[in-house]
Image (tube, rainbow, N blue to C red):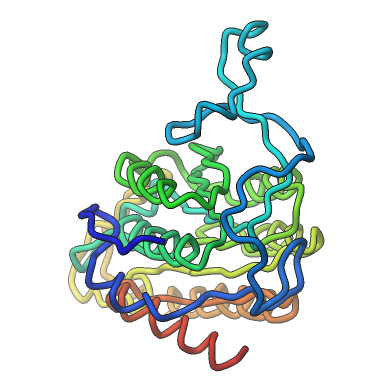
Length: 300
């Protein structure tokens, strides 16, 4: 992949330099990929037809199926069994709760920065990567590609995405797990503010389909520490509820419920062999991603 020179909102050149010598290898054997090996990078489209998908900006015109266009007046790309090593799917939460920030960066902005850096990393190591944004439905799906030009397509989508409706993680994940035909790497970036049992069931659906799953669980520092110490009006981002109260009367109960929630997620991910990473958005995303990649490389 060519050296990155552009300036995009969700890909800091300083972060690019930090991760340029790092890798994100799959730990599990998946179709077309064995950890540590890269076969036939950038071989393009093979002779075996797989399926159609709608055209997206950046696709090569030579792969448009003109017969289908003649019948439907819509552009579709003919997909073949690709020779790239690994398909990575980044699932980014764009729900209303991701708007929250107590420290200058919203959870969505933080997650978009992670998604941009991971996209660059996967393409640099000649794997294919796609992006799915969601709230209570799938907002946008960009299928995995390994072309260097795919980076700009995903970065532009990240920049144009706005947070929207309330979170509904489970049915999105169940639906998407059924869509993916080949085993690959699923990266979830979300605050996971949904029922923990339903979250775990839907993440296990990916595992049942033989995907490797990595979860970046993003929470704001205020959500983790509940630092409020004076009469405060709390407004719900998901349901618009409001409550005026003295925070000290709630803090103990809040922290207990939070710890129970996090414990259930940690245990569920551990039992299901899912890579779970809780991130406080007070920590710079550059530090968070380099620390994670370094730890993963040491463990591989």
